[in-house]
Image (tube, rainbow, N blue to C red; front, top):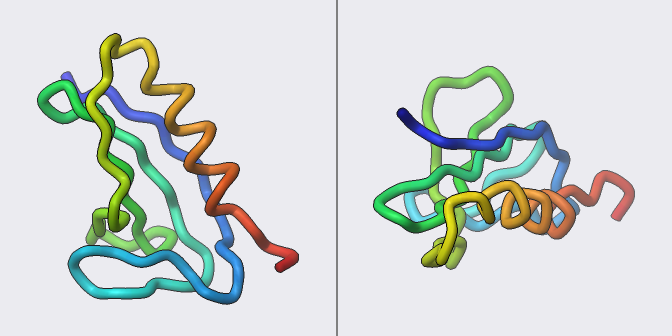
Length: 83
C-alpha cells in the first residue's frame, strides 16, 4: 500500500525544479510518498498523468508517521501563488 499525501499548489515565478524535465510552473499537484523508507516529493501538472521528482526532495524517515509533516513543509515552501 502506497502511503502518500497530496495537495494542489501554485509555485512562485521560478517554478519547481524537477529531475526529469527541469522547471515546471502553473497549477500543479504536489505529492509526498513513502518509497523504501524515504519521503519523496513529486509534482505533476494538475490533472496530468506524469509525475516528476522534485530535485533534492528525498529524505530518509525514521518513522513513516512523519510523512504528513514532510508534506506540510514541502507544500508550505513550494506554494507561493502571490510571489
